[in-house]
Length: 204
Image (cartoon, rainbow, N blue to C red; front, top):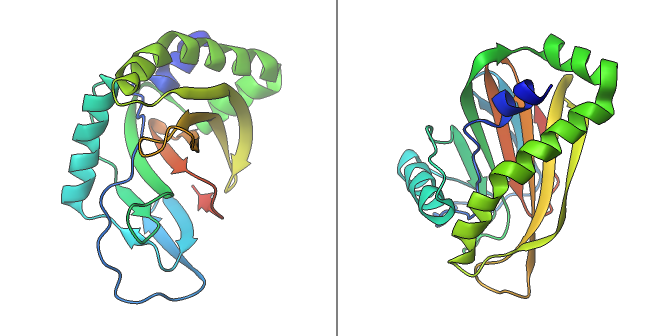
């Protein structure tokens, strides 16, 4: 599974900071369902702000600068709370996978030895995350606690999940909670990154 774990986490996208928010025309209660390329459906609060393509490009460039990790894609969707500065966001990306890894492959590995799958994911994270943390340290951000790793269903698909904490760039005493949902879909994976605690459901 180690090689498959590396496939899943190659081209890691460390989505760290929310983009600058745009004004929201109306603050309406409830939640809105957003369909991303017909492959992922995300439910977010109706008063959140959807980032435009230029904002998403800037987020990509800033994430590369902060982490020192090259990112070969721009998020397909980025939605954040409002007003600025945003304390919560969710971002959806699609990342090519080589070799391809299907949901059937993942389920087979998990059924055969779930603990080994989690161990392999943790091992890859420990090898690759120091580059991210070194870059973030230059901006005063540090890891808080220990990361956790899980395999959970999301919208009928199997997601490999990393959860970790880091200090806020605005307040070193504040802990931001980050969750990354990696969902292999064959020749690509869906990466759903959530910062902060919000009611969020994703369907792949």
